[in-house]
Length: 285
Length: 253
Image (cartoon, rainbow over all chains, first blue to last red):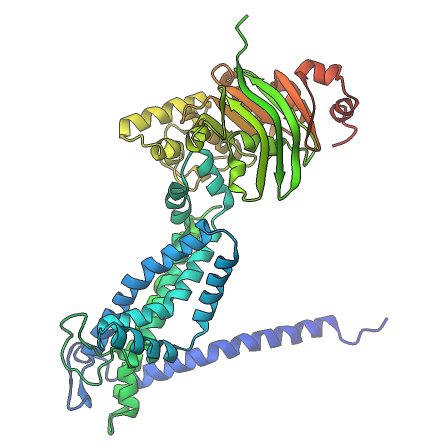
């Protein structure tokens, strides 16, 4: 029988298309990072990172925006991490498979699909206005927290469920209670997965603009916030302001701000890679 | 002749998963300080029976039972506290199942959860249980290394020691040698002969030769029924039931 296509040629064609698809994914990332580095690194210096903006943000540094982003990420962490992990433990280890659990699961999936601007409006309506937090770090952190919760819950749950069943059975067979089993046999082995999900969701929180737009972000606030009820500047919103709201800003300042933001997020992602490879080296089951 | 004490009494035990019967109306007793071998083909109910005794079946929400199981004349479902029961009725699983922590931490896992603390007290427990499982000499210098570095046979003896750390009365073995080489198997069997002096042992095995070597009495399960229970010698030479004869002579299973 005569073949339509020589198998070796077929192999080459398939390889080419698979490789091309991968390239299409990688190329924009490299391009964005390279452009930002090339055009932004000229303004990047100690002064840029540690001083207040001056002359209506056309000069000076971006320190309050960096600090504000750190505050927001920390606030998100304090709220979303415990709530997310606890509900993941509940869903994975305690809840029975019934209609209620399925509704909760559906809610989590849908929550993950809600556009971030909707979270922003929710935060405005609920935290800022209804709970009277005002535009504040507290309201912004909680809004970001609600936004990243589904990610934390889903990744934590997957991490918990990837712990072998035999660990649980061994623990129960040694007379441990359910909580002892979770605490000593399951959680330690799920921790790397949980941490990875947590850091990834936090780096997402650091880069979001819409949820903080109405809940915390200050247009121009050349000082550090005094309390959690204070407004704060934040890197993504500052970048948006520089790019669209303030006339005659040097392009390098915008690229420099973007570089700091992207740099922080890349560092966070690198940490997760390190955590994962560290634990994978130790994991032997 | 020592007086025979009935350690475990099973009366009319039936078990099902999601309505699917796994054990049908089983009744018998297990004597103190004996090794009861349990044989039977796949899905004959022997593992189900084992997991009933330490109530590990309770983890499966589809599990249902009827009948009565007494250990030390106390009903395991009515009178025993489930966590105390599991400490008293230890289990060694088919595949070596050390937790991914150190040898030491594996051994004190049970005692720690039970509220035992203090370095010295825990060290005593570790030494005693490792010696009883014939593993002490092989691991005494590396107690704080990962248990996963041990060989399969050592891991399985570690699991036996981990059970012993809780000072159980009964130890359940669920095909403990199914993944082991003949030398490791011999070591485990040797340990079992020592252990029966202090404990009551139930050994579920797919290896009829092993059941013949190790057990005092043997129970033959088939499709959820207890077909025959008798002295090991009788089961393997003059079984009463045709089906037992067929199984031990290797005609099916």
